[in-house]
Amino acid sequence: MNTNENTLATPASLDISQIRQDFPILHQEVNGRPLIYLDNAATTQKPQSVIDALAHYYQHDNANIHRGIHTLAERATAAFEETRMAIHQFINSAEPEEIVFTKGTTDSINLVASTFGRMNVQKDDEIIISAMEHHSNIVPWQMLCEEKGAHLKIIPVNGQGELLLDEYKKLLSAKTKLVSVVYVSNSLGTINPVEEIIDLAHEHGACVLLDGAQSTAYLDIDVQALNCDFYAFSGHKMFGPTGVGALYGKRRHLEKMPPYQGGGEMIRSVSFEKTTYNDIPYKFEAGTPNIADVVALRTAIDYINNLGKAAMRAHEAELITYAHEQLSNVPGLRIIGTARHKMNVVSFVFDDIFHFDIGQMLDARGIAVRTGHHCTEPLMNRFGIEGTVRASFAIYNTKEDIDQLTEGLTRIVSMLKK
Image 1 (spheres, rainbow, N blue to C red):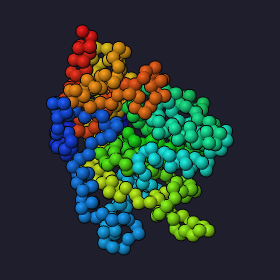
Image 2: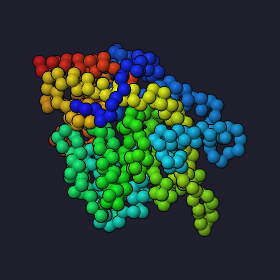
Image 3: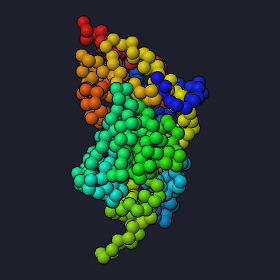
Image 4: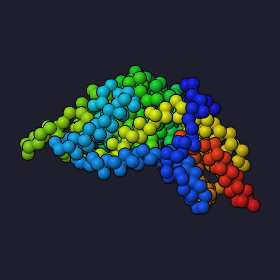
C-alpha cells in the first residue's frame, strides 16, 4: 500500500511524546484506562495554544468587528482578518478576498449549492459527485436537482475503494455544470486523484468543488495549482475550534454569485426600495460571525505550520501502514478500503460481530473509535454493509495506540467466540 505518491520526510523529525504534551485532553483516563483517541476523522483534539487563543480573545479583545472605531473593535477586526490572510497563505489562494468564512465544510458546500448552483444549474443539466461522498456533499446537490429538474450522476468505486476514472469520463458531457468530490474519503481514507478529476471537468466546461475536510491538515493544498473552482474545509478537523471553516472560491465566481444570506455586513446600503451588496468576501458573511473561533483557527494554522506538513504526513503514513499490518492479524477482521493511495483512516468489519458492539467494548478499554456509516450511507451500501468500525489517526497518535487497539480487538474476538 502506497500512502502517497510523494516522497515523505522521516518521522524522526517530530517528537511525538512532546507533541502529546500540547494536547491536555489526552492526559486523562476513560473507564479506568488511559484515553486512546482514534476518532480524528470526526474531530481532532485541540492544542493548549488554541485553547489559550480562545480565552485570550474573550479576556482581552472581545468586540464586534468591522463597524467599530474603538480600540477593542479594531483589535478584534485585525485578529479576524489576520486569520483570513493566514488561510489565504495556507492554501495559496490568489488573494485573501477569495476566502469566505463559514461554519465549516457542510456550510461551505450549501453556500455554493444555494448561490452558484441556483444561478448556473438549469433543467436537465447534470451534477457529478462520487459514491464515497459524505452526506453533506450529496444532499445539497439532491435538493438543487429536485428544485431545478437537473440530474445527479455518481462516479462508482471499485472493491478497494478507488474511484473508477474511466466511468467518470463517460459521465462528463456538455450538460455537466459542476463536479463536487471529496479529496480524502472520511470513511475509507482514499486519496482521490483530484488533479485529473479537475482537468477532465474543465475540458467539458464544468466547475469543480473539492471537499477538503479530511485533507487540509496534512496534504499540501495549493488551490491555484489544483485549479479547483471551490475548496471547502472545517477548522475542527485541523486542530482548530468547532463551528468555523472556510470556502475558497475563484474571484470570478464569487463576484457573480448572489449573497447566501441577508443581514448586517453583507450590505453596502439599504433602503426600503433597494439594497446594494458589499464586495467579496463580505457579501457572503452576513451578521456577527464566529469571531473568537476564527481568531483561534489562526493559532491552529500556526501550529500546523510550526510542525511542518511533510513531517506530519510522514508520521501519519507510518501509522496507517502499521495499522494495516497489525489489524490484519486480528481473527475475522476485514478492512474496508484498501486503496493504493490512502491516509489516516482504517475502516473494518467483523462479519459476525456488530460494529456498534465493538465500539462499546473498545470504549470500555479507553479506546475511542467511531462506528456506523460515518455519514456515507450510500458508500456502505456499495460494500453491502450497514457500517464499519473506523480508527482514524492524528499527529499525536502512536504505534502504541495501534498496539492497544489490536490487543483490544483480539481480546474482544476471543471473548465473543467462547
